[in-house]
Image 1 (cartoon, one colour):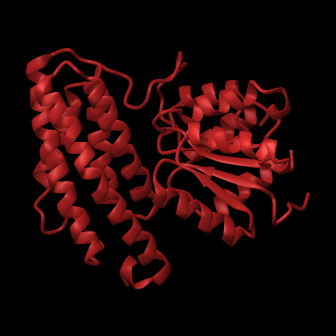
Image 2 (cartoon, rainbow over the protein chains, first blue to last red; image 1 turned 90 degrees about the vertical axis):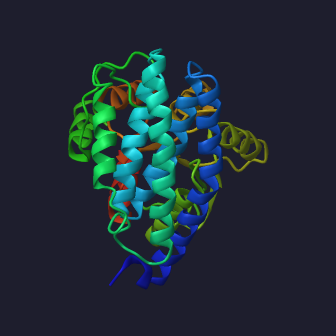
Length: 170
Length: 132
């Protein structure tokens, strides 16, 4: 049974696909702005913020391949926003354009009921390229929106968060 | 403690699909009075209107990463108002960096939930918040 066979889930997936499709134009616009002015890295923050929306919803509907794809795009977007290396930013923009293009194909597949949107798109090599690019920013910590004075960047599981909340008396 | 089914809840997320998922889960848990806002600044306006109308929200479920006013800034804004210091606030996030959790706790978050999550986990978090 695919996700599309469950009527309640199908409605959510249809909404997700429509909403994600509506984000492609603004996502491309941020990249076009960056192409014109590569050091205007606020556009990359905007890109990261928009793709984060897709990532969160993709995770929530169980579209893990799409979520992984978005997570890499988000990490690259936010991390690249903290560099002024123009040649590297040009590479980032080019790869993020391709990311959006492939993402739109994955969404189209999901819309037609394909539960494994990556299959058939030969995206493995592209994911490897995204990981390679992400690795270029491994010395940059912040991979999400700005928060004041983060005490640590260590990622936590829900169980660890619960433990931390308990230890803080919450 | 038994929670009122008609407790006034505000769901804040910049992705409409996520708001729908969360609203569906809250409905599944048994809540009937759920409103939504697409980011912290819209939510703040709705909160002010609700307070002015004498029917303030009793529980906030908010995403972290949003344009205009983030979940964290929305939380800080709420906690800066004396009458809202104890308003239950559940923060939802797609990432779970320890620093973020600590910052949210310092800002007065009631609890924290990481995407993806189920209605059962959401219910457990709500029970924990309201049974303190």
